[in-house]
Image (cartoon, rainbow, N blue to C red; front, side):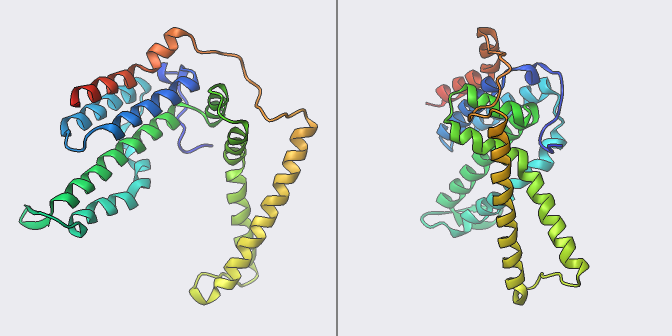
Amino acid sequence: MNPLHRPGSTPVHRLPAQVKIVGALLLVLCVVATERTAYWAFGAYLGVLGGVWAAARIPPGWLAKRALIETPFVVLALAAPFLGGGPTTEVLGVTVSHGGLLAGWNILVKGTLGVLTSLTLAATTSPRDLVVGLQRLRVPAVVVTIATLMLRYAEVLVAEARRMRLARISRGHDPRFLWQVGATARGIGTLFLRSYERGERVHLAMVSRGYRGALPDPGHRAGASAWLTGLAPALAAGAVLAATL
């Protein structure tokens, strides 16, 4: 089960994957292109996303827990005001760099909106539909194939690594300290070889079953109404961006 996908029958879930991919990309581009001092615009972008969450019935708490993946960028954003140079200013009695403060805000707000947009796309689109959507958008076949195998076999490799670790522990060996790095490296090498061999077997099995570099397409194409509905949030974000220029 994919922890990022929330199955549902909402209008957002029913939109063709290629429409949602393009819409998410355009929204992120609008966020990135916005001047960092246009503070109100970022609130407007969050409002646009909030409308999508309401339509897709995605609880804010579900998004908040998965948005913790951006914690390293949050740390960087919080450190930027203290590491930057140039003119200084005071915030809550603490002297910080004005340029660093703006840089930290830029990283924090744009990174957060980008992560939330990606989570929204993942929550409303199954992994297989994402791959089919990329295929319909004429993304190079090699990229689609890599994405397909990664999504399909990431959990298999994680399970294999877990079995190898349990096997080591059952034999009285559990490398976890710096001086045991050699055993850890050997385990990673073994996992790589097993993964490579599994990939060869899977590819041969796929070719023998008629695979020619593309997934079967169910044939549900996006009509004009689907494009208009799916791109409505991106169009709203574009209007916000135009208002800041």
